[in-house]
Image 1 (cartoon, rainbow, N blue to C red):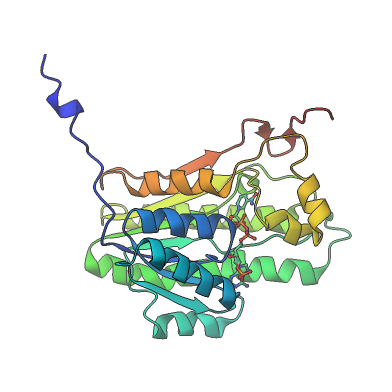
Image 2 (image 1 turned 90 degrees about the vertical axis):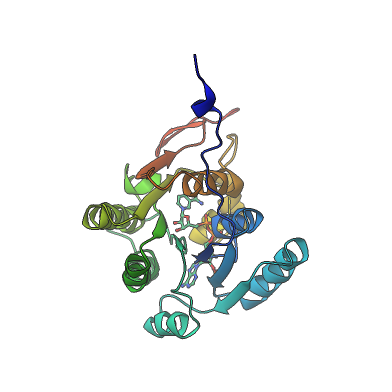
Length: 265
Ligand SMILES: NC(=O)c1ccc[n+]([C@@H]2O[C@H](COP(=O)([O-])OP(=O)(O)OC[C@H]3O[C@@H](n4cnc5c(N)ncnc54)[C@H](OP(=O)(O)O)[C@@H]3O)[C@@H](O)[C@H]2O)c1
């Protein structure tokens, strides 16, 4: 029996490619930037917190001095930011990690505040869609590109008290599915990464309280940002004929978006 074809490492290297990572100043975006850097990918990193981006750039360059790393601090809720990214050449990349996003509040629709809804719509939907719209033509004309969108389990299994957040991630999922159909056969890979509970700054910011944010993960073992980043780089490292359309990645303790098994609870 000839097994030789099973032992050839089929994973093409990512080294030398370029990636735009939105929301690289913390959590999943930061971890993804680190993993991509480790794989030799040149990076364009955005977020609003300039200090964080400066620190991240210098820490990455210390480890990987040959990489090209650009940073741009901008608020993606502001349409002017999309032009700033264009002027800085941030759309000329091989890979887009459409990660910037947020949740505000856990209120039911009847008591929710529009001020909480608007930023989720602006960043999770409008900015994610528009950045993709601006990047896709270049990828198609260069004959290659990879787009990974950070959806959420909440976009697949919505839960009470998550109305606009869940809806924003469902919208992103739908957008990815359509883009995937529209571009099939053109060497563009479109992937939706849909994690469940990941312990980052997400819940602290959502609930506007470190204690309440911490309590979300009490008694259970959530995913870490590294768990998600590892999957993301694995998906990108597949041979080009392999497209991970979507990945629902859950913590073992989370059986459904609203079923979390906690010890001592
Ligand atoms: N944590 C979870 O349980 C979980 C589960 C499923 C999906 N997700 C999704 O994963 C993505 C990353 O979340 P995370 O958990 O890593 O949370 P995080 O630590 O709070 O990171 C969110 C990132 O988005 C950026 N961002 C937020 N609003 C922005 C704006 N207006 N303009 C520019 N950048 C903005 C933040 O940067 P600045 O604050 O510096 O602007 C930060 O880098 C989000 O799309 C989230 O919905 C998270």
